[in-house]
Length: 401
Image (cartoon, rainbow, N blue to C red; front, side, top):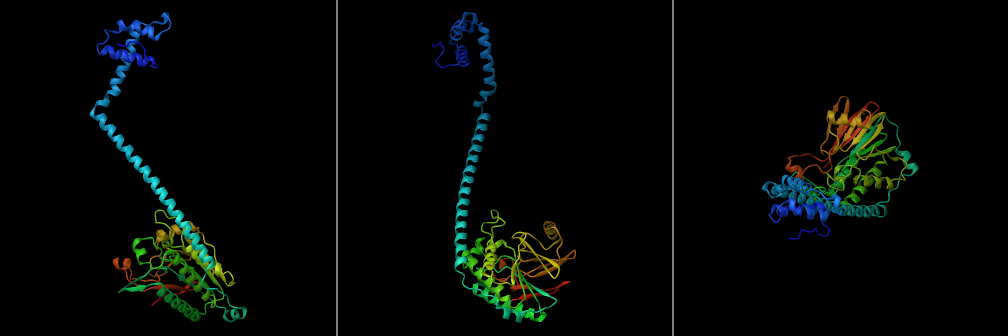
């Protein structure tokens, strides 16, 4: 038997090993081994200890061991260890998933930034139309003085969507035809009421985008092409109307279809409708009778018509009910005369506690898979309001072919 202290063995480890040998019957008792322990552990004979000092130390250690560590051998403890292992594995998988998602998001963001850079370059340098304002003598011919202005709502164009069914059809060519039809009807309304100025409210969802699989399937043009086409159509629409009114004021909000990521990851301010407004503003900067007003942010904007406050929202964050109106009013800090909305794809008007709410229709109307599955039918339409100092004098739901 090796009763000497091993190299690197601590005092406690040595006493534990000797105690285990006593328990195993390899050593008679602590009294027998005490002289050897003293020589191995003490340099001076005056420091020698009685055998009880070593015995008690071992007994305390053994009691602690049996009370705590002997549970390792039990089924209960083994089950506990197994559960801990499973939790560790789960946590490892969660961390791996987080890293995977993070890397995926980085790749998506890089692709989005690349597309936006490309889009900005195309829009800035390759516009299809060179917009020119009227000459001063031409402007004088259209200037009139009257008691009313028009609010022209342009909502939910969904450029890029492409469908044909028993309930309707829509594509880029149809969208252009309906925009021209809408423009002509606005001019008819203007002539009928001799309206002086025009406030154009871009209500969002100018493009269809590809935010859902079902939408992506029906989109003929990719997202960049959608933005380019929508930008040209909206800019041409504003430029043409400027030839018929003393002054044009343009207000714009972004819609949910123009977000550049899925709903749960999308940032509020990252919406492609904002680029369409930017494009129109840049292309029409030479028009001294066109003004683009600054918004609260890209979800809320406001303007004043003949002394009345109108607030414009897309409608994905706001509802046509008392609760929705109360939250919106508290957000902007005052009660408007009227709130303008889109998003729902059908025209509607209501009044809540004296505040009017006007919802415009959509350019596609019904006939796509979504409206058929939900049994939603309705004609494509937009909304024009004739406004004087008392507010809305006339509300036109302009149905389109």
